Length: 103
Image (cartoon, rainbow, N blue to C red):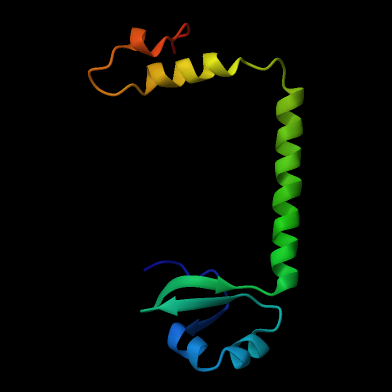
């Protein structure tokens, strides 16, 4: 059984029957929407959703900055050649992938 990541839950049937009541009871708490007792979706207040997006954006900006500060960049064609060499389809030779680097 999948883990329900909310302290409140509601069935899809209940949500269809009375969406306003579900939202009112939830307040600012997330609500798991269950289909056959398995999470199908989560309802979030606009404030919680906005806070999540802001946190994700801040984390992403931090990771990008750390990447920039970590040193010289690799040319994209070198990275793609390396990926092609590592994950070439069976029967495809690494030389066809054009890789200069080997792991």
